[in-house]
Length: 262
Image 1 (cartoon, rainbow, N blue to C red):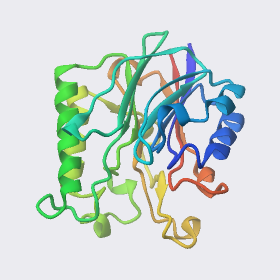
Image 2: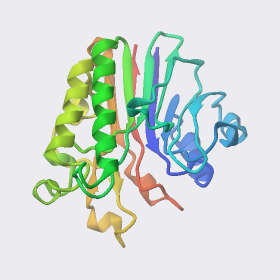
Image 3: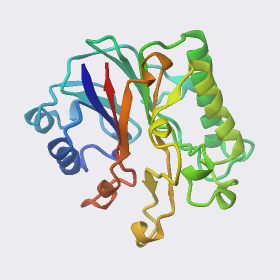
């Protein structure tokens, strides 16, 4: 069985329904994981998605904030959700495909503006969330699993437009990278995107603040596709659909793809 998966922080699934449909129609991933849906589950526009072949959905939603959803052409059953750090936020949903693959879809807290938990509660919440992710996967060793989502951390030097300038900027600070590394190690996760694209600058997010995001190209790779070692070798064809950042009324994130032959 071969299937293609995409992950995308959509920044409001209802506001950006047209570009979700565009992605479905033009790229047709078998599984589409969305973050920051900003919608109650019953308000997600499934009618339009079903017309494009996405008959299955599992999701956690909130009005106006957060929210994660897995839309699938393939049958998928819910496999749990966790409220790490007890934030009461809709930030995680897990689903299991008929071939036994479990997909974890995460929206990790952004962490606010100041990388100091003493003065910025949101940064502390982000670190606590990552710590509880680590502990969860250490206690529940994943097998035949994929983890995707907006993890809100660009871990490598070539995952940001300027490593030195961003060392004190939330999303690339050493403490965040260390916390994310611990999550990876706890689950023995493999970074599928960088397995396929091991070298070079690679981004999935460009700020709305840039007047010309494409020319300035001050991006960060915040969106990730990981897999457990038992299936990571079956992954290939990873890519970032950069063009989607330039679509009409875009998200500030671009979709990230990977294909698995299992």
